[in-house]
Length: 189
Image (cartoon, rainbow, N blue to C red; front, side, top):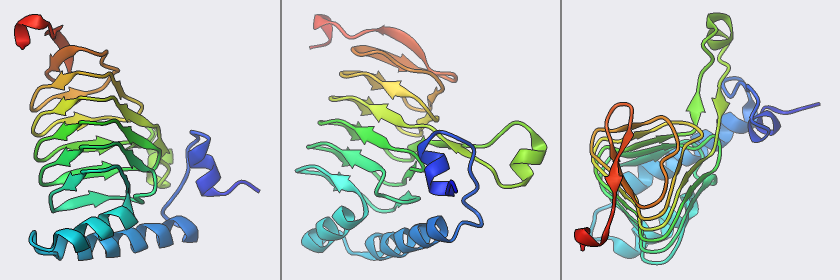
């Protein structure tokens, strides 16, 4: 028998809505996030301890409240990470974020999507494809990163962009849909 959790791991359509295991995991994460989001910014040590119960976070990581995710355990972040307010990560699939990544306010990283077929969608079926963000990336305010996207190292994604396809390393990209504007060169130093 294949569980809903096994289906999502295989990249298949799955239904988390009536799966007791997935529902329990999401509820536990929401409870931890509720506690985290209510902590005072002055409670630095407690905030750090609690965020590390929710996500895998490297050294010198900062996640400003509020922060939201589905499971947390699928989020793997490197060192020297900074996320400003209102970061949302729907992590049905793995989200990998490298070192020295800066994320501006109101960014959404979504591994989850729904079928175009109305019958499947109305059944509650969804899919989840991994998202990967390289090292030394800056994600501007109100960026939306969609399922299955990879963003290369040393790249800047301009504010308000909707990233629907992979973005290579060493470029500035922006727009809806997000497109490469130009390479980052020595002139940018």
